[in-house]
Length: 288
Image 1 (cartoon, rainbow, N blue to C red):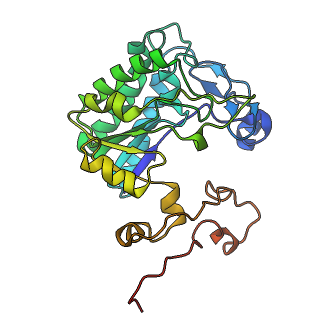
Image 2 (cartoon, rainbow, N blue to C red; image 1 turned 180 degrees about the horizontal axis):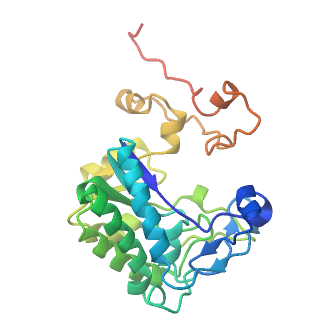
């Protein structure tokens, strides 16, 4: 089991979802002072302050501590979250990272922070216990660059990451679910991430996710396009997911997204099972 390490400008104190932040009187810092348009809410979030100086210093200290904590907690490894509009994703994106120092501007500079985070985590775990998740198409949490710049940035970044010899590099395919319509349009830059980036990954295992059916995943693996596929939503809504695939059972139970991320205020422990651990098992022949 790998623990995911992430950080984000997604905190939105001005709309009331960060009461502790409001009470502290401290500003929310980001790579650049640009608020995110909030996914599924069709509005922009709070005000942000640019973090002056070397943005990596404090964050890398916390990254080191997070990696140590994960190891002490007994996890098998750590996944650095470079997707979803979180901090590494933000610094890679030229539209959000408008730093004029060594952390912004060129794709080499915008890649530097993510590479430094990986080196910090590797120092704690070793490269063979570290993975990274990437989402070049963007969309979610107001992410996305023009296609040419996306290809240029991620070709460089993935090449550099692969040189570190990680356990895996997971690249998420475009998903309409993660690309909501905000202010009348979608934000993602759609392209075939497997075709665009697979040839760059030579020292790490290449994984992917994003709307794969079991049949499509098997085909991609058998054709050597990727080494494996992982699922999130289908795994949540099918407690016997692997067994369903083995027996050819349907995987069509929808996910109730409301409780997935801990929206449980005022709910009893039993109520919290709904939409989380109460999904049905399939029926299998000759089983008691």
